[in-house]
Amino acid sequence: KPRKDCPLDKNELGRSSWGLLHTMAAHYPDNPTDQQKSDVKTFFSTFSRLYPCEWCSKDFTEDVRNNPVDPSSQEKLSKWLCDAHNRVNAKLGKPEFDCSKTNERWRDGWLDGSCE
Ligand code: FAD
Image 1 (cartoon, rainbow, N blue to C red):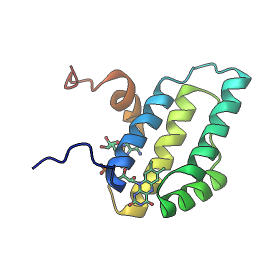
Image 2 (cartoon, rainbow, N blue to C red):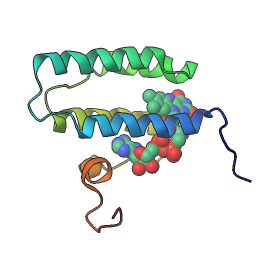
Image 3 (tube, helix red, strand yellow):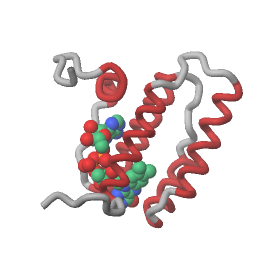
C-alpha cells in the first residue's frame, strides 16, 4: 500500500535532493556573474554541512572541500556535480552515470523523446 505524507526516508530525500541540485546546475548561466559564482560556492558548502543525514553530510562536506565546486559555467558546474554524484554512487555501489548525458537527463530530455 503506498505511503502518504510520511517523512522522507534517506533514499527519498536523496532522490529529491539530487533532482533539485542537478536541475539547478542545468539552469545555471553559461556566463555567470561574480555574484552567481560566489553564491553557488556558498550554496554547496552550506548545503553539504546542513544536509539532514549525518554521515552523508560528513562525507559530502569533505568531498566538496577536496573537490571544489567549478562555478565557471553551466557546463562546468553540471560536470562537477555529475562527478560528485558519481563519487557518492561509487561509495554506495551504484553504477556510474555517463556525464555526457547530464543535459539530456536534467535539462533537455532524452533524445529519443521518452520524456515527452
Ligand atoms: P539517485 O542516486 O538518488 O539518483 C537519482 C537519479 O539521478 C538517477 O535515477 C539518475 O537518473 C540520475 N543520476 C545518477 N547518477 C547521476 C550523476 N552522477 N549525475 C547526474 N545524474 C545522475 N545515501 C546513503 O545511503 N549514504 C550516503 O552517504 C549518501 N550521501 C548522499 C549525499 C548527498 C549530497 C545526496 C544528495 C544524497 C546522498 N545519499 C546517500 C542518497 C543517495 O545518493 C541516493 O539518492 C539514494 O540512495 C537513492 O538512490 P537512487 O538509486 O534512487 O538514485
